Length: 254
Image (tube, rainbow, N blue to C red; front, side):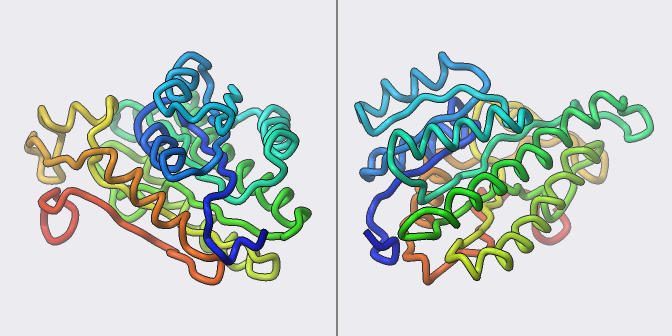
């Protein structure tokens, strides 16, 4: 089967048990894709599998993206189970508490870098390894960037630095993937209503020092955005896709 036809294929999603990863998994499974669900905790992954009612089209594969060997094994399991890999949604991410940068601990910095930068690189690397070798070759990678890949929030240096780095990885991998029919893009999400973002409806620190609530979008909109990007033929690529609440403070002066 040629992936130029853009029919549903085989996907692997990291951070698939909650939030954006869960929404993307349910959108892809609802559209007929087969999906490997990856995350550190198995119970949320099993719950997503049950909610999807997709039966054998779901593979639950708990793993920590910062563990290079464990993540490689998950990619190999996916190929063994489904036969190939057409899409990686490189979604797993974390942040540190809002902290003045001179008070951020070395451990807090490292924990964010390990997941958001190293873990995402391990995903890209394994996807390339699989997609270059399979027949038909190629596939698609979608990295979860963030609005923070473009503009910081106060006291967010670790998260902001790693998300800016994701943009660099997306560009580099997109260039390197051309020769192997691997399309690489990035989705930058602003204020999707997830468990982690719930606090923003109650008030979040703004650049000028005030605390203000911010508008949100339904996380299922993000899932549909991932599905749209994934559904394109490999000859087309959304390099950067920003989806956000229309009135959130991002463009302009807040």
